[in-house]
Length: 223
Image (cartoon, rainbow, N blue to C red; front, side, top):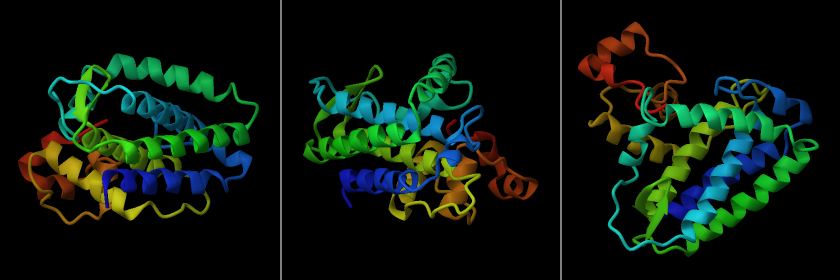
């Protein structure tokens, strides 16, 4: 699958899920501290809006990050921590500015579909600028896939019947986490477990630390 097809799968899974949720489920706790399901969806909406701006912002300079190194500042304690706290406050307020979940869902669906079309129209090797960095369009799209897939898992933690996450985008998450780890994961976690433990949503237990050895100190790989 192309990067744009993977993004379509990741965003499509979210759209399909939130389009069926009763209003009360948007107030359920997510895995993101202090955020409900609706807050995470608003955060993803802002990410899709950023994608539209980014795909429309071609640059000529060489990429300074790729799909893996883009995430380095997002490790716990990294330089993005203060900005992340400010963003979290903004998201909570903005999500509650909608009259109800249907408006937020409709806004998300339209924006996500437009972002997928923009990703599909971009030349993979073209260069785009976002958040002070330059990436290829393909690498940038991969970062969107990671964001969407991990937050899909965040939103489903308390749903009565959590839907299955999209399998192909989870493979992208595994690839990025392996890149941040600097090695192929030496333990037999499935893709969901790796996504949750690699991002600190679920902590390592004693067996994990024993199996990982010196690599355990690198966890969580991104926040």
